Length: 245
Length: 117
Image (cartoon, rainbow over all chains, first blue to last red; front, side, top):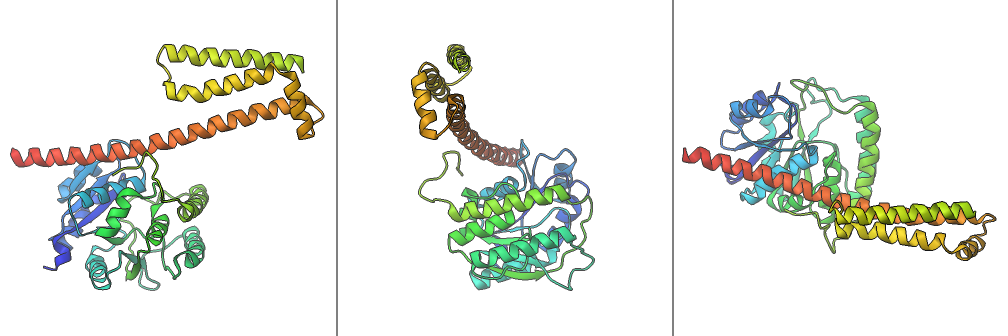
């Protein structure tokens, strides 16, 4: 057993993923039998919680819908308080291959960085098709983030990430509420934390469809753009009085 | 202009009275009533001082003093709304933290109960 496996939590944020969550949890447990799996149920109206439990996951159910960022942060807070050394976040729709969790963790351990991102590798996406709007959005944010982060980032929207305990400490206090992946990179950059990328196979989702509609895409771009600049300008002297662990 | 000043005087008095009534019935917290009372008093003072409105119009280069009055009213409420956006944001942050805390504690209680039984 690798030391990272002893204290690594697999985190699956889920909102109305009842049709796929059980299979995803079972696959994660089959591939990574030593790692506890935590599903944070973002006040789903379907059977997400019971299906996740049936698959063998621990479930934290939020009493109100917080959105992806609030949901993921709940898992980070829990993991930090419980003393986990690292967390691997994976989507509940089956797009990420749990077989790559080990790859992400190995890179996190070897490189000593604070975050490893599983990126959609060109030519290795077995059946995964990224929409045109998403490709344009990714290209735009790649260009925007390059000078801010001082390095190239292949897929800033990937939700398949492994984070270290130091990153958990930061994220448990500051984490974007909506569309968190891109802003989270800027949050890390402000702390002079580093990240690495690992190529990963992306699969078609097992059930349901993306909640990002064309109108939401425009809102997404504007929201994230503002969030990125706010994170660059943020003053660290005082936290908002509402922030807390 | 006189009619506009009169309307502003009445509106300011109604605003101050409504805030005081809500305070008495504990429907608004004292700390949140201060901005509205300050805005009401500022607008009341402005509506009772036509000379001040004329000077402001001159200074702003406006031919019509009514325009200065409306601008002043907008500026006062702009600050009140800004203050309340901050209050709402703070409350949202607190709600998120509490929601997360409740969910985590509930999970821990369920686990403990599961182990005990």
